[in-house]
Amino acid sequence: MTSLIARAKELLENKTVQVVIGYEAGPTGLARPAFITDPAKAESLIYDDRCVQNLAVYLTKREVKNIGKMAIVATLPVMRSIMMLISEQQLFADNIVVLGISDDGKLLDIADNKVMQGYIEKSDLSNPAKYKGLLAELNKLSPEEKFLYWQKELSKCIKCYACRQACPMCYCTRCTVEVNQPQWIPVKANTHGNMEWHILRAMHLAGRCISCGECGRACPVGIPCHLLTMQLTDQVYNYFKVYAGTSEKMSSVLSTYEPNDKESFII
Amino acid sequence: METIRKLIRKQSLEKLYNNLSTTRKVYAPVIASDKQVEYKYNPAFTDVTFDHIRSTLSVKNVVFPKVENLFYYTNKQTESTITDIDLNKIQEVVLWGAHPCDNAAFDTLRSIFCWDITDEFFAKRLEKLVVIGLSCHLSDEYCFCTSVGLAPNSTKGSDILLSRLKNGDYHADILTEKGNAIVSASPELFESVTNEEAEITSVKQKFNHEQVTAKLSGAFENPFWVANSLRCIGCGACTYVCPTCACFDIQDEARGKEGKRYRSWDSCGFGLFTLHTSGHNPRNVQSQRWRQRIMHKFSYMPERNNSLGCVGCGRCSSGCPVDMNIAEQLEALQNI
Picture 1 (tube, chains in turn yellow, red):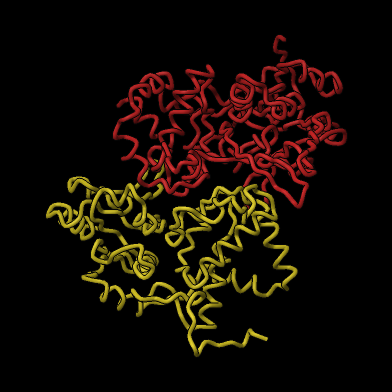
Picture 2 (tube, chains in turn orange, yellow):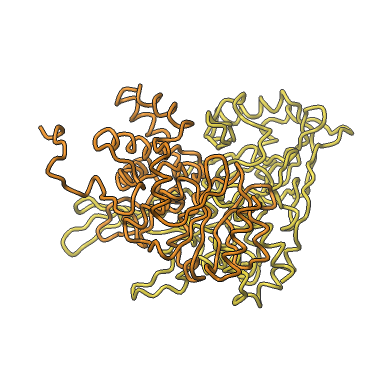
C-alpha cells in the first residue's frame, strides 16, 4: 500500500485535495473509514480484506464536504456509486480525486472519469459471487414461502435505518419515513411497518443499487436486506440490460420512458 | 435484605427454570439460527444459552418495549373518548440469565423514567419484573463494565445472581425479597454453599468515568467531536441496541374515527430528532448528535439523575457498522 500512501500524501501536500477518505485500522483490529487531512498522517491508511465499507456514502455528508476537496479510496462499488451520484447530480466530477483500487488491491491510475468509466465497463457488474448462491436459493421458493421468509427476517428490524444510512444512494436529507403528514410508513418497528419500509427502500433502489451489499452488512440484527436490492438489480438487468453506476449520464430505468421499452407486463 | 448465598446444582437449575416457565413468562437468551443471541419468552431449557457474551439487543425491551400502546381514542364530532391501557394486565416476567451490565441498566432507566413524574408504563413493567442474573464467565474486547463502576459479577439490578462454579454448579446470591420469594417456592433446589470458586471473567478497566465526567463539562466546543465522528453515518443502531437509551417518539395511528397513540424507540443519532417546527435544528450535523450521546450519558445524567448513563456492555461499539468505539473515545476524552 506504499503507492496509495504516497499518492495520498502527494495530493495533500500539493493541496490538490484537503481530505483523503480511506481506511485505517481501529483498536479492535477492524478497518474503519478514515479522513486524512494531514500529509504526515497518510501513513495510517490501509487497504486489505478488512476494508469493506462503501466510502462513497461520505461524499454527500455535509461535515466531510466542509473540509474541502476530497480524494477517495475507491474499489469498484465505490467507483460505481460515484458514477451514480454524478449522474443524479449529487456530486461534481471535478470536485473529487478517485484513488481507484483494483480487485487484487492495487492502486489504479484513474486520471479522470472517462478512465474510471472504462475500468467499470471492463469489470463484472453482476451481483457479487458470494451472494449469487443465496439469491438462487431464494428464487427457488414459492411466492408464499418467500413471503414467510421475509416476514420472519423483517420482524427482527428495529428501524435503526443503518441500511439506509450506510447506502451511498440513500442521500435524501429527508426520507419518506420521516414525513408524518401524511404518515406514509408507520414509525413503529412492527412486522407490518418493517415490511413496508424494506419494500419501499428496495423499490427506491431498483436500477440504482450498485450491489455493494453494505445495507445488509450494516444491519445490527443481521437482516440480509441486501438480497432485496440485489434481486432487483438482477431483474432490472434482465428487463433493461442495464447495470447501475456505469456512466455519468445514467437515466433511471424506473423513472425514464423510452418509446421502445418492453411493455410485456401490461395486460 | 441481607444477601444470602446458596448453592444450586446444574440439574436443580433446570428444575427451577421449568417450575418458573410453566407458571409464568420467562424471558431467556437463546442462540438463533443466524447465530445471533436473542431473548425469547419461555424457550425450552435446553435451548437457553449460558455461554453468551452479549445478546444482539439488550433486554430493555422487557420494561421499555420497542413499540408500546399508550391509549385508544374514538372521535365523535367535537368529542373524543379516551380508553386507557389497563396496566394491571401487565404480567409478571422473570428475566433469566441476563448479565450484570444489562441488569444494572434497569436502575439507569428508572432514573430517567421515574425522574420527576413517574412513567406508569415503565414503572408497572419494572414492578412486575424479577431478575435472575448471571455473572459473566466470558468477555471480549468490547466489554468495559469495570470502567463504569460495575463488574462482571455486580449484583445491581438482580434479584438473584447466579455465578457458575468450576464444577458446573452455580452460586445463587439471593439479593431481594422478590428473589427470596422464588427461592422460598422451591427450597429443595437450594443447598448450602461449598468451597468451590465461581468462574468470573476479568474485564480490563479502560478509563476512569469520574475523570471523563469532569473533562466533559469543559469540552462542549472541543474539536474532538467533529474529528471523531466524521465516520458516523447517523443511523440509530447504537441507541437501539443500548440497554440505557430511553428516548421515544409518540405517534397517533388512526383508522377513520378510531385510533391509538403509541410510543416507539427513537434515536438522538437521527437528523430529525431535534428538528424544530420552525425548521431550525440545534443539532444539525452528526458531530453534534454524537456529542449529545456521550454528553448525555457521561455528563448530563451524572449531574441531573445522579446516575451514569452507561453500563459498559459494549453493544454500541460491537453493533456499529463503522466501528465507532465508545470506550476508545472515552479513553481519549479523559485525557483531552
